[in-house]
Length: 600
Image 1 (cartoon, rainbow, N blue to C red):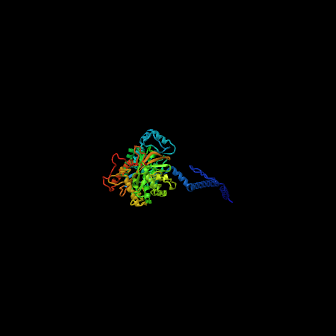
Image 2 (image 1 turned 90 degrees about the horizontal axis):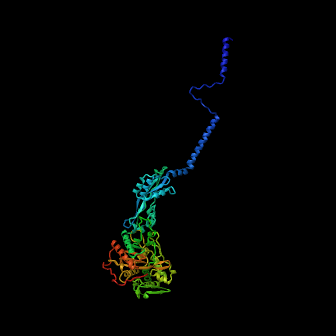
Image 3 (image 1 turned 30 degrees about the horizontal axis):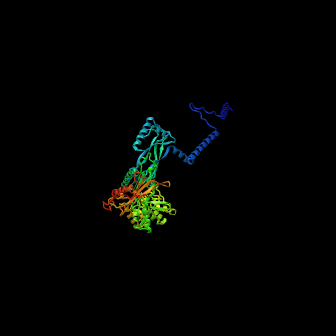
């Protein structure tokens, strides 16, 4: 081998030996960071941890979205969503001619969140002046318990606007309706009134709440953390307005009745009184006046006693106004005729240990004269001639002992005991109106059997259309006979000549009954009169009750009779009802003559 060949072999050997050595990583270029590389196991652990964390987050997300969704939605809505009530417009109450008796007007109420209200002393003083109170009172309202508080209720919109212009933080307003009563005290006990939430509290407002009230609506809003409404989200339920209601009341007759009743109470210095005008053909109540009364538009410091509709809620012993029903029962039974003579025994009759009296001594009286002169003895003898069951049936079928069913809240049935419990003295006194009790509307309704040829009319305070059928109680012949007897009451020689009306024949009956307190009769009286006109074909029935007249006179004829004449005469003329007598038909007893009075 040549020297050149040996050199080449040695060179190859060294080169090959150097190729088997581990390679040194190339140096990084200047300005480049070295790359970190994790071991494979550490990478897998890190990836697994991230995957597990993602799975937990995904599971929690699904749990909140599906399982806890309702709870979280509720929590969010409780903080930022509010459901506000939208008040419904309350229906009007109108009289039979459409004249408004109760209407709703828009008002606003002011309220605060107590923990969010911020007001300077100057703002507080200005707000107090606007809502007619004191800064001290406002501060007390703001500092009370609970989150919510009213500042003022049912303000006029312009008053509320002035309050909001003060810029008090946390003070808000809401729309409402306030009830206004154009008739004021004249119709107060009929219509009644509503409370803060426009819900009926008394009278027709209470009785017809469902009809008048409608259904409130609601809307959902979004509020910010200061309580300000920032978005009106949706109307959940639209309000449904209440419906108008037409009463049978005639505002003209109502005012007439109230004016005359109030004057009578002032003249006789009486405690209270009621007056009812009834349509004899339909049973509609055309007027229902009570005194004392109140103004439903301003109920501050009004005694509850003044809010009662006494004509329906109070009872009294009717006294001699019951005698026509006793006579009718005897006529129907064939026991007497209008001309049958009754011995009144000089005005006194003893039954067991008890003695009953007439106000005036008389001898024999015809049945017609028993009514005309209001003889207790005559009525008692006629009543005792009948079985107790017969007399009770007459009273019961005339509506006594049951409510008049007007639908008015608080109306009462009065008291009529079962005939099996009557003692002879009780049957005798019930024959002239003692020992039972009635309300005034109930008594007026009972007289429809004499006004409408024996039919008892259903009584109502709502307007009706067309003819109204009654329930037969007595024959038309008996009804007309009793009506002719009742005409004698208002003629000279009767107990109520002051009840006469020029141009009209009048039929009616007086009542003068002692009041019962506990179980004793007192020297306090109820004076009453029930009458109808025109007597030839009655269109109206007027019933009057005066409670405890103390002006010196207390008899039904002289206390209630003149009120009847004024009210009935005015009502007949207002309604244009034709006359049935000459205009010079009024015949009063001569001056100084003895006036026939009664005490029963």
